[in-house]
Image 1: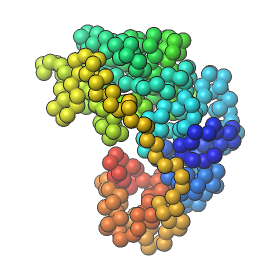
Image 2: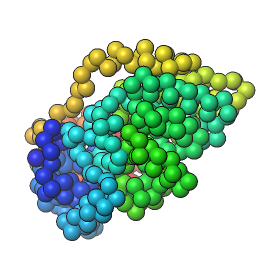
Image 3: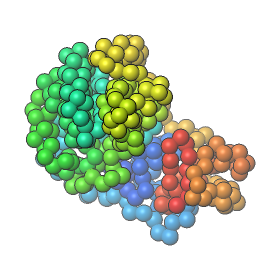
Image 4: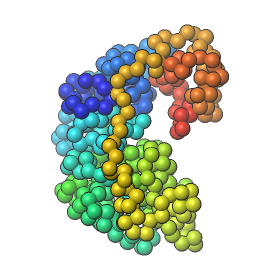
Length: 372
């Protein structure tokens, strides 16, 4: 079973193949999806990785995760009570499965049933004011009483307040590192309390992975992707919470913001969000009234069947040279590459996939790419 989104439970062999592919060099969630669309199965994609990297200009093919390594990771995860779930399996949040870069496998610990309920994200400043912490807790408690699961990032400040206030009704902690590398370390006790109740912890990272700065935006996309809407309680300019809000907007989620004093720099980001069109929140009813119509619509999943027209099996050398020549350190849109090169969209996508597997391409938001 190799469809990206499926309602059939994976076999153990399928799970191992998926883990091998996503753990291989230069393969992220978007590349994983492109490879499966291109070749029709995870197993076929694994077999073709060296050839694609070579065509992309790699001096040597990237490392492919071995079957033994994948089996060992699954075994160690199970000892910790962690299950690796694919989109469409019970316990994988249905809305998270709809985003372009949904994790091909999600590490879930705790009560998987909580991940199938409607979720609202509450995020904000790590250095929050007393008023901000109080309101985050009040909002989380009231939304929990209304039947929503609260999802957040287990960080200090607003995240912590939201989790604590919703432990009894169900809350989900999204981790930036592996399940055995909790950050901040003092929140291991909080996570244990969440798991002891009706909550869960999720991550896409392997066991033993200590979170780095670049991992927190990746975590934030999971927070926004899994929920119906994101409430930002306090956020300074250039805050990580604003990254979560931006990702939520790009993913088609509702964005809410709690207003604050213009004299408090911790409210500058949330006040700007309101100026940009975020829904102003002063009570739980503001969120519930905006979310209610969305609950009545079915969750739409992207098609998971391979499309032969998305990629070209083997682009000509001159096409590859021309497309690569148009790339540089400045991001450029894929549509612009198609127009400027005169090549078909299928050829451009294939060349970009080859370059990515060779470690030569970086993808940015909004369909932009650049050469490394």
